[in-house]
Image 1 (cartoon, rainbow, N blue to C red):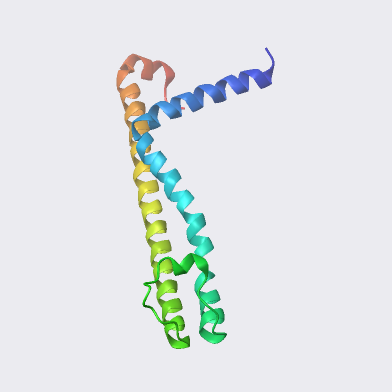
Image 2 (image 1 turned 30 degrees about the vertical axis):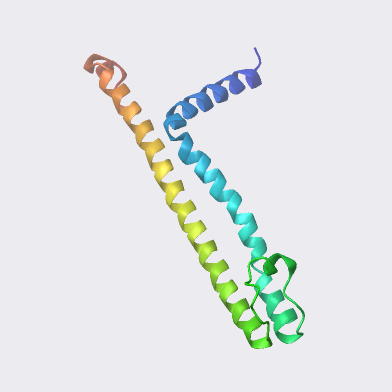
Length: 141
């Protein structure tokens, strides 16, 4: 066997052991993945308030098609209402982005600490199984 295959086998064994520790937290990991995917649409919404402010507030163009579906039918678009709408949308997008970042950070920390605790518990359990004679023979390295 070559050194590369031995290294690959060790890496595979290490990954399998890591997956075993992380298995109870698969729902948290899926949540992390989904929260990470939410960052892309939120980032794409950031320039929309500027577009509304410039096009509808200053140039008196109608609202974009994407936004018209969420605006009540009786809403009369004036330059000042378009600017206020753009400011409100900017605040809403910013708050949603910050909440997504906070939730991602909290869930990442929680899942990481739980996996680390499982690893440390297994390591401590393994150390407890070793006899004192083994420690005397091996000594401190």
